[in-house]
Length: 261
Image (cartoon, rainbow, N blue to C red; front, side):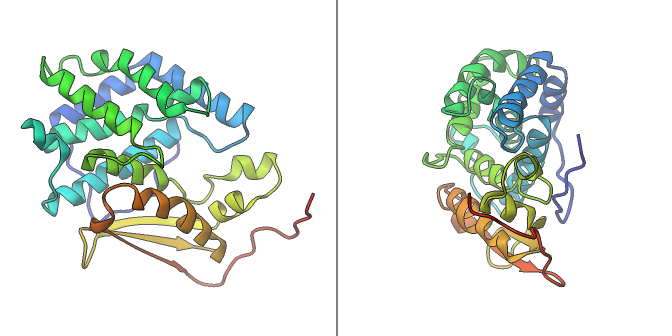
């Protein structure tokens, strides 16, 4: 997998629970197979951007950093309703990131529902040795909520679920749309995605989180106004996040010519 390009002010401290869960994720042959199947459906059959291991790694990295910034700002985490803490929230976010798109192995349509089906059968194993009952069931429920709520029209009821939703939208850096751009005709979706250069996360000046997007072409505004804006506004985290974007240097041309079919 390629290196994650998201930049932050500091690295996230990983608790022991998160380390164990990450090891379980890395060691799951079933999960790796689902990521492969998801990419076959997404890339080979539908000609859209990838939804496999690279997407998972990027989303998990972004989500954990978002969670860290919000936690440091004193924002109440969803797991606190169950008497759990930040390390448990990290586990929820990591597992939600790993499992949120595995439903693509079945179909793109209703993939969030299919992701729940796969996740229910896998979370007991992925959480083995980390939690005992009833905490294991509590964490499982929180992960399932995050998976379900990452779809645009569903309102997350926890910070962890909102974090996953925003992180999913922030996988938009350069090259992330090159598969549909190469194999099909250019669209505003693929062209605007190619215009995104870097996504940077840092503490905000007026809000806990500042997301700064560097673009090479103004077409990137479409990604922000149609993808990020929608997910952010329905994430439950809008009051905690500020967003800015700019073109650095000379604006670059993305396509030479477009013919209407």
